[in-house]
Length: 193
Ligand SMILES: C[S@@+](CC[C@H](N)C(=O)[O-])C[C@H]1O[C@@H](n2cnc3c(N)ncnc32)[C@H](O)[C@@H]1O
Image (cartoon, rainbow, N blue to C red):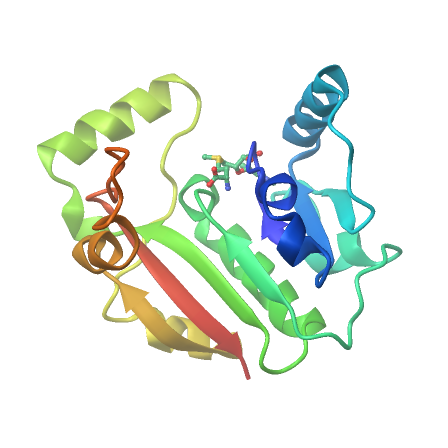
């Protein structure tokens, strides 16, 4: 399940994995409509295991949106939620995480990235100002030292809480394309209990 999928092309890049899993792209209706148009223009074939679910996290619950889709409540699931928590309010983030613990079986996994409050350096402030100007203000940050406690109240156990340098070391150090980890974002991996 790829929440706030944007232009992510996982389902098109990894046909090897797609033969083993069902992929759900859950995104804001406007973004998803744009993407579906682009896919049609490009004449990309939509794999039969790929499902599109339009949801506005500020207006409806993920659990309700998945009702009536082919999402199987019995199957352990992996929820990837990248580049989204910062644009929602804390209540909206928690409501979506609660939806995950409501619908997904024990052992399901959610990963999400988040901004940290004390990292409000001048560089971050500049970036926040730029984001605000384009209508995407940063609304939510998490304190890494209390995240485990906050998630526990939702029925999630925090298994990993990677710092920017952890992310750099694990995912970027052997890359040769010049990409590097954001210096301001942490990555959490939590398991439904
Ligand atoms: C910065 S993009 C991240 C896209 C992708 N996950 C990635 O990492 O490349 C933010 C995504 O969050 C989605 N999003 C923002 N607000 C949302 C909302 N209220 N409901 C659903 N999706 C939302 C946008 O539609 C967009 O796809």
